[in-house]
Length: 320
Image (cartoon, helix red, strand yellow):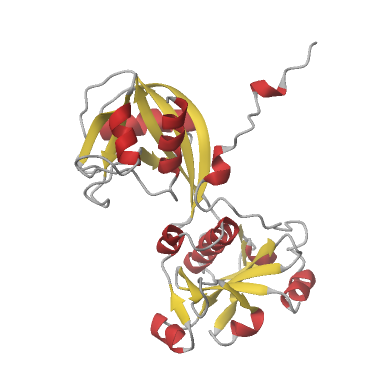
């Protein structure tokens, strides 16, 4: 039987690699982190570092030209961080271990402790001052710590749970149930019809911004069927073919955005006003103006940290 050319399945360009929060290059050491002795050894290393969060927001050192989110583990006590809410993230290319932990100080106390600031992670990403690897590690840490904060008790019996396996599990001593971090899949897609694209605007968006439609994938549902269902529910437009394009970890709090292109089978819009405040078709040329921030009415597409930006950018590049 003849072999199948790899080019039929594997492309040189991986769109996911350049979406926001996708630059995480840590080796997660999944085979070693369950060993508590190994965990403690890594924590005790002189070059170990920690990302420290105040609630869901990272603490950064603003004493230099650019904000710095990596702290030596000796700063752990400065922020009264919690070892019971500390997760191992991985080791970097130089073999240095990185952890994430939760401060037991409020924002005012953190900022009074030195040249430190509690910063919204989305804002930090938009500023573009951190490396993709740094943003990816912050996304990993934020999602993990949020899960730990929300799963202090066993969903099976209600007893308290304890952190285990380097932060990738919580165990219940009462009923021996083991809990693992969850990731919520969300489909997001650009609907195409000839040279037109369907975009919507949520009430949460800036008044000038339009984006791809999106929705959570439900139990027992494929990605493609989620796109078809959600697109019809939100816009009334029927979808035929669906093609996967890229994915993105979205740490607000712990979603995986699954980006697709969708083929429209109808054009009449019946908008779900509970989800959207506007939904309309845009020509390719108008979309290009929005993407370049040159639209005469000031209309825009999402910022470059979002997978919607990547879907639109790649569509425009392919149809030039």
